Structures are given as C-alpha cells and as structure tokens.
Image 1 (cartoon, one colour):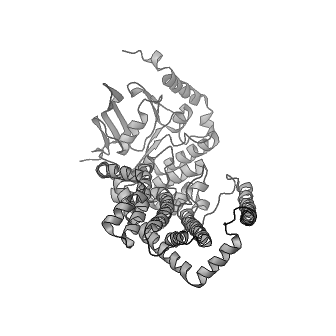
Image 2 (cartoon, one colour):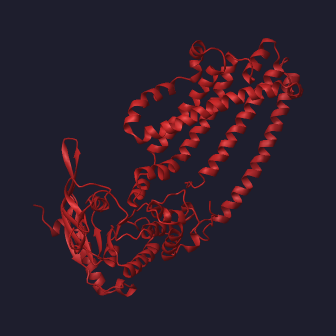
Image 3 (cartoon, rainbow over the protein chains, first blue to last red):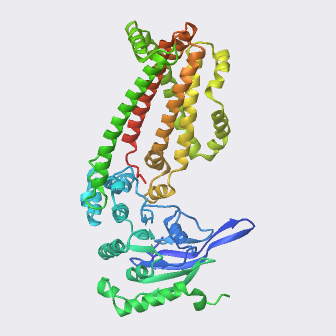
Amino acid sequence: MTDKPENKIEFRGTAKSYPMKGSVFTALDGVSLEIADREFVTVVGPSGCGKSTLLNMAAGLDEPTSGEVLVDGVRVDGPGPDRGVIFQQYALFPWLTVRRNVEFGLRIAGISTDERARRAQRAIDLVGLTEFADALPKTLSGGMKQRCAIARAYAVSPQVLLMDEPFGALDALTRVQLQDQLLETWTKEQRTVMFITHDVDEAVYLARRVIVMAARPGRIHRIIDVDLPYPRTEEVRLSADFSRIRNEVWHSVYHQEAAAPAP
Amino acid sequence: MAVITPPQKETPARPRANGTARRPRRSHVLNLASLAIGLAVWALVSLFGIADLPGPLAVASRAVEMAADGTLAGDLAASLRRVFIGFALGTALAVPIGFLMGWYPTARGLLEPYVQFFRMVPPLALIPLAIVLLGIGEVPKIFVIFLAAFLFSVVSTLQGVVNVDRTLINAARVLGAPDRTIFVKVIIPASAPFILVGMRTGLGASWATLVAAELIAAQAGLGYRMQQAQLYYDLPTIFVGLIAIGVLGMAMDRLLLLAEKRLTGWQERR
C-alpha cells in the first residue's frame, strides 16, 4: 500500500485442501514463495503436486483455504487483467477470428476502436500471426492457436504472465520455437512470468529459478537457481552447464524420496 | 464477419475439398434415381397390386385440383400458421428459461422436475385436456405445438449452458470480463450449437404434433383435410396431404440446418 514491493508475486503459507469422503485431501500444504518483479520462474513437479492450483490462485481463479497470495503487495481477490493467463488448452473463443480474440480483453477494458485495433495488431504481429489475423481458430494449428492465446494475453499489457503448461500439447519442434519466441518477448518487455511445466528441459531453458514441487501433500521440494546467461540460445541449450542444471532438476523431480526422506 | 484465410500448409485442404465437392453431386444423383425408382414402384403397385391404391398420376391430378381451387393453399396456410406461432412462442420462451436454468442452480432445481416430467408426456396426450379447457379453436392446437417446441429447446439450451467449456469462462474472467459480459460474449455463443439442434428437433416435433392435433379437432389444415378425406374414402387427397406434410417438414428442417451452418460454422469437427 505504501512503497512498491520488491516481490511481484508472493505466496504466504498458501494451502488448499478439499474435503474427501471421511478425510481431507491436501492439494497444497502451506506454500511460501516469492517471485521478484520481472523474474522468470518455472514450476515443475509430478502430477498432483498442486502446481496448477498454485498458478490458479495467483490468477484468482481458485481460492486458498488458508494463507494468501499477494500480487504487487495486494491480496489476490478474483481474476484481473493485470495478470494474463495462458491455458494449456488454448481457450480461444472458437467463434471469433484471431483478431477478435485478441481484442476481447481490450473491448472489456473499454479501449477506443482505433487504439484497440492498433494494440491488437501489435500483439498479433509480435507472435507472428499477421497473415492469419482474420482466420477462425479451427483453421489454425496447435502452435498457432497458442500463439493467438499469447497475443490475447499480451494485448491487455499484463504485468504478470501466468502460464499453465502452455506448450504441453505441442510437438517438440513447435515447442522450442515458442520457447524462444516467449523469451525474446520477455527480454524486450520484462514481465514477471510464472510458468508451469512438466518438461525439465523447458523448465531449465526458460527460467532464472526452477521451483521443484512434490506431491502428497503438494509442497515446494527444492528451488534451483539457473545461472545461465540470457539471452538463452541454442548454444546455451547444448552447453555443459545446461545439462548439469538439467540433471540436478531431473533428479529432484524424479528421485524425490531419495533426496528428501519422508518424516 | 471477416474473410477467412485458410492456412497454407497445416490442413489437408486439397483432398478434402475434392471429396466434399464430389460427394454431394454423387449423392444428389443417387437421391434422384431413388425418387424415380420409388415413383415407378408406386405406379406398378397401384396398377397391379392393391386395387384401391391411387397411382402417382391420380395423386398429382388431385394435387393440381386442390391447388387450383385453393384448398391446398388454405390448408397449408392454416397448418403453417399454427406451427410458426406455436414454435416461435415455444422457442422464445425456452431459450431464456434454458439459460436461466443453466446459469442459476436455484432456477434449475425449481424448474427441472416439471421440464423432465412434461418431456415424458407426449404433447398429443394433452390434447383431450387442452380441448376441454381451452375449447376447440386455435388455442389448444397452438398450445400443444408450443409445448412440443418448448420442451425440446429448453432441454437443449440447458445442455448447451452446462456444457460450456470452463476454460473459456476462465479465459474471459482473467481478461477482466464481468459476469454479464461472460454471459453475453461466452455463454450465448458457446451454447448456440446446442440451441439450434434443439430448435431443429423441436420443429420436427411441432410439425408432427400439429398434424396429429388437426386430425383430432380442426376446421382447416392438412390434418383436417386428410381426416375429411378418410370419411369420404378419398385416397388421393390423403396422399396429397401426406406428401405435403413430408415435403414441408423437410423444407423447414433444411432452413434450420442452413441457419445452423451459418451460425455455428466456427465449430471444430473432430
């Protein structure tokens, strides 16, 4: 409320549990995590570790049962255009063209027609969909759909980008392309990005920090710093340092019992 | 709407375009051939088979007579008027109520027992009651048609709303859309395919109900004409009525199908 907080996103003892017949299922067990302004953080972990729940709570689509999530020092209470969300299933409005999809958030914000067209065009150009601006989603490939979804999020200029396994459904080649494109935009516009993935390579390649989570109950297992320079290039991807960090992340994702003995 | 540019590489545009271009033509030829064969069989059966069965020519000349003296036009107008009024009222009420039931669990809880109950009662079964309560004028007939159209459309609209992809709603919410915008910009378009399917089945049911209702109590209309013809053993008139009912029903169905294609062409076919 007073001075600008250093942390863009802050999870404070954030927990989520669901009543199950007779017992309580703990999806997330008191997660505390701070994500700095303009930081790129990836979250990896086995399924059921609550990584999507964590992201949804930052997005305001899900509420913690205890603890809280702060964005810009303000407690999250419902979704808002300051936090762009990219879903794995693209979630494009299939009855709208690429352009109208991208304009969706701008219309809600009540932005004038001229400005809207200008900003939508800019976002469409940025993700390389210029030629397909007037196409319906059904005519696009998976990668193009996700680029359109990214453009839709960019258009409203969110300060935070929350991405929930956005490239999970794409083929390996397209995935690498979109990763590079995402990093390029991030370098230019320096948003805070929280990126969920189950792909260890992707997690390391993109992030400054990799948050490794564990399941049952969902919690943070380890946080691994990625000391690789930006811009990340193919050279970085193939470097010895990259594979060292990748191995470390891999181990902490796939051999969690060995690394952290159960209490 | 904007012009749709198909992507150049990803879709197998060439073979599919050829396939769809050839298939309708081929099926049209088959349809016509089948019609011709059907007429021939009919003619043969009436000549050498069942003695009293009128042939295509007898029916055609009766149709010409009925068209000339205006009875056909009058009956068509009477029947169509009933269907359109009943169908329009039924759909107009069903869509908002379906949305209400899909959107508010309270509305659904309160209305669903009645909808499910009346869905199991054929609208025709209500004709005796409707005639007793509403008289023998236009009202009971329009009422049963209204009910038939309403029940189909309300259920499909409800289905449509319930089936809207949660991630689409979430996508709108994270872009800052308030509930009203989500309803208008997401729920309505996303459930349009369901609504149109419901309208099509509803129109079919309306048409069937209408003709049956006219058989029971009417002073004009295709069903009434056939009922009269039955009394005078006038088989050609019955055939004219039957064919008119079928052809009109198909025409109305085609119109709605066209509307469906227009309005919901954005759907991905799997």
